[in-house]
Image 1: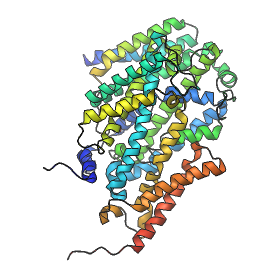
Image 2: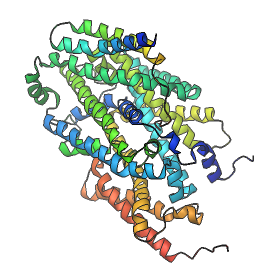
Image 3: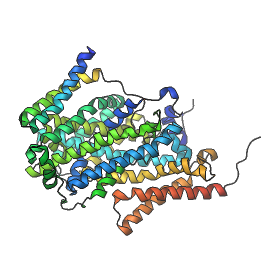
Image 4: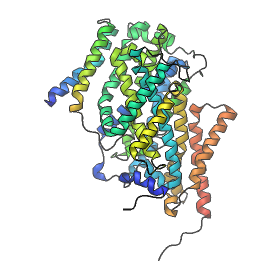
Length: 467
Length: 61
């Protein structure tokens, strides 16, 4: 068999094992999805997001209501946007998107996705480093630190990054198995941390909680340099935190194994056991750290709640999130360097990621980064939605690039680029913050793709049919 | 043996979360809670890998 030469062939070769739609005998039951979602959304990021809500001065009522509503919207997005297409096509995101965008545009998407993965993994290496550095009395980065603040930090990040990278090279599958073992335990650590420190905040009975929550935890007063968060910020952040997965359709890769589209609702286990509980718990921890004048980085606050077990949790949480993302980024970037063996590309990705991790900005500005990540990838999810549901109703052909054997779908490409430009414009001209841009952006992307597809298909020359 | 491992894992999870509520109730000290959580963590990671199922095909991306 001749080795792949063209870009399309190289892309396809990496994903070849997943080319065919999932067959009936490979579909999975509810338990797998419950476990998967619950585990995936109790991660290193949770140690950062909760504290950042506190830093942004959200009030207690706004936080609780915002998390309830926002996480519900996320669940509904998984269930009504992603799952129906996933269960009808039984394809992963790569193969579905390829039919619509053409392989060359998909290549660009892959690269962008890989870069986002690199930065996400970098932030998780930073998280783990804040735990590893505790025994060495390392100077921790503060909430407002953007650049490396000590030699100790640099050395620790490089060490953690090296270990994560080597493990990503040696055995992604084993790490994934370990991650599944760690997940139930990590969830309980979050619960334990949040409960155990309440007496130190002045909560000695359940009745005290709401008063203390308003006065000492989610006070409604932002830290210097932070935008005040309201109910809307929390709700939209909770909704769009995983926008790349639900609205962006990346979780087609998981939900294609679901027996029914309703399994999309199992994402609630991730949103409410994971995000809701963990973000509240980590917020409680950082409030205590601020009260004590202690360090607010993930490692130290976890130590406040659970001692050494808490520190171990942060290391594992950061590591098990960083590892698969480095692996996936390496996979995606392999199309750029087809002559590189996978280990070499993973090493390169790990090196880039580790350098990025040196900058605490990735961790301390994680809310902004997560919002940006989802926003950048969201338009392609809108394209999939529009192509699947709307084009047929307008008498247009789905998967047009595949049918025409096009390398690039210009409607998809323009929809992507113009949507992001429009979102930038909305932010620049009207000041709508990044956390909210996904909503107008989705409608813009959908409308653009439909309109441009109309223009493309109605003006295209007819395809010659062989007799 | 499998039952023993699962019991050990359950105890490990119990030691992870129950002490926190005992601290909240003022029954044990924070130091005791931290020690019990560490014991619980060790117990969980020693026992759970032997009985938890292998990763299913619907793997996260």
